Length: 385
Ligand SMILES: *Cc1c(COP(=O)(O)O)cnc(C)c1O
Image (cartoon, rainbow, N blue to C red; front, side):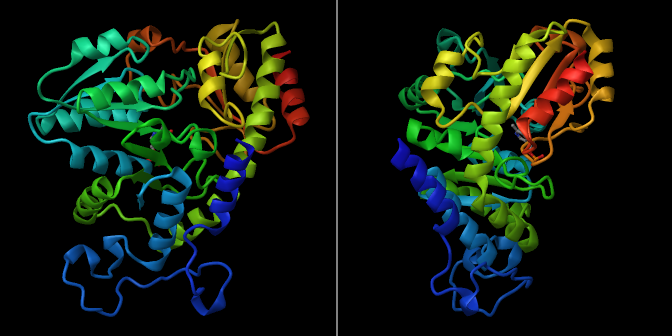
């Protein structure tokens, strides 16, 4: 395991870097050129043109991400939603049916229930924790199963090897959005998933300064998805590629530090009288603690949610009184962010659906940054007091 972890840390720095280096540059420069000299390519997707995702900045990232995820190939996209929508539009055809976990990122939920429905793809939301319900929802036209590695905002983790096995047995393409874990904590392809997706906006880049997406899978899936991406046009700008490459190099140290701080923060919150429930998979009372301990490596991630005893008003007062965490959506950056999912990520759902999913209006979600843990805990304590 230690050897495994050291390997990914080394890959983040060295995998995929060009040999020889461009003009000897230690860091791959930004290739701000929309087009490149024709080199005799016979295939449209191989012609060197920025929308076709094949500039030197793209190619370094593709090789690095494939290595880090343990996939044959990888692809970067203009956003996490570009990765998700392009993948689903490649895997699914009109008439197909998809199984999806009930608690999905809002954009993904809307893409499945609005856009895909318009294109003749139906869906069934299943309880990720109830394998019998997956089998009951299967139809002859079911083509894929889609889930998130750690659910937002309650940080539930499914029996991922069971999902991958179920998909294999039933000839489904298994797709997992692993934004919340990053490949430092979880490598879904090694568990048998077909396709892993990321909003690289979050941990992979890690500095809250770009939007980007990433996909890793087999050569066959990535070739097909790249062709769709080239036509839909969701390619990542070379400067954003450069920033993502820079961010990736520190992914391991950032995620491990954020996980350690999150565990300390979650433990402190658990002790505080103003907090009724803390949701953190690293705490023994979390319903999926045991499973998370088995599946995740090197920590339980940087996301912590809590329900306050004082409900909505207390949550509002808390976000106003905090000095360090910034009240903003998104996650995975160096600054600790605080948000109320009922106001941001899950604002699109009606209040009853939100409650059914266990997301109270007073739920507060923290994305733990890279500040000193004691400073964060002291700030949370003064705001809660
Ligand atoms: C943010 C996020 C997305 C969407 O990514 P963008 O980069 O904003 O397009 C998808 N899935 C999850 C889990 C996310 O947190």
